[in-house]
Length: 352
Image (cartoon, rainbow, N blue to C red):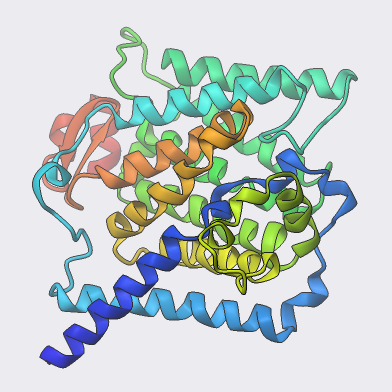
């Protein structure tokens, strides 16, 4: 047992080094290189290098499962010091940071991301207006659940405008919309009027799951569409930003750009699979902090504005309360006290 624990900890250390090394993992190449020139090559999916990276990512998730077993199945590991803290304003942070990102893309008539351009036409102004409405509802806390529904509608409409894989890259917005649709904006008193759709609060137990899976799907799809299945796009990005291959800067000349792209894709794929599986989410979030922040000083503000929703999701998942507790519309509830602490109409729903 001691030898097994030592082996797993060594593997964890090696995996952590792998996560830290490829700093390009969080950079959205399509935002800084012409993605239309380099569409994903789905035929690469069954090539040996890509299959090896998929296997490596699965091994990373298995390693996380092994670590969870070593800590007696505590899926909230690590729980030390400030990590036991629960920020009651996390819904506000999630809503506001998402709103800022939506405003940034809406003013340029894009949907969700700089690479999804609608155009200077009637449809473009309508969709941008819808994004601005969602942003207003998220920032003000008024009609937040309606805004979340509109956000889901925008996501579905996007499938008629762009390739499915390009839309699935933005699945993080689905997770955010579902989370706020269930939990509400929090820390706001809209008066005596009941917010529409507040009865959805009865599903508060799955809100965090939706948030985590939405972010995981985004990161998983991006691992394929911007790296593993689109090495030409990644190479074009590295041509503009050659210093992102930190391995070569350290003198590891054998770590070519092609190998670096595969490694970055494997790391991103591991993070996506780990978030979707829900294994040790706090440890996964810690693994995300370095690569998702390391690129910010070296890229335009587009990188930060585009990643604000991801950063907000990371924050919420890091400081989630125990599974038996949650905040709904700014009110603390638990499995046993939910019906007593929610407003009258919500309590009736929970009792039914």
